Amino acid sequence: MIYDISQELFSCKVFPGDPSPVMKRDMSIAGGDIVNLTSFTMCAHNGTHVDSPYHFYDDGKTMDQMPLEKFIGDCYVAECSGPFGKSDAEAVMARAEAAGADKRILLKGDTFITEEAACVFADKGIWLIGNESQTVGPEDAPAKVHYILLAREVVLLEGIRLSEVPEGKYFLCAQPINLGGCDGAPCRAVLISG
Image 1 (cartoon, rainbow, N blue to C red):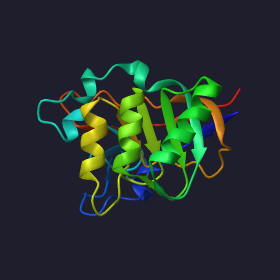
Image 2 (cartoon, rainbow, N blue to C red):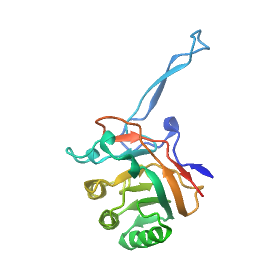
Image 3 (cartoon, helix red, strand yellow):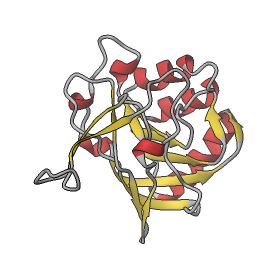
């Protein structure tokens, strides 16, 4: 089974202060043109997207410099709610390790990663952490969690949708658009069960 865990871009939730995506119909068959042609403007962090280290570190890797294997491969979906602390991270890592999917962790539910949990994930050397919020850290103070994870080049997959996905092991495909020199990029993230 394939689960689409991405938001539709033009109706997506937007992080407070970020510009919303805007679509413009440049040509239309109904208007007498030979084709329908669309342009749009957006923030690299709208909808379902990934953050690269350059988002918080001026000397960090940009999206085009991040290795694709971080975005594609086995992952573990863990259901949780509320602040996600150190003991939560240790428990999830134990379940992910037992399932053979400890390089990519997706958090399902209304949760955010605390600094202590971010340290657990960074110390374990995971490649990707994802969540349903538009930021992995607390919305009112996300910077410290980003600093901890991005310093270790942990990819942040934000704004995913997991309500229909049971906890467990999956194959993740969340490769970003190849945006040279950018700090983030949208992606069409999917999970494959099997």
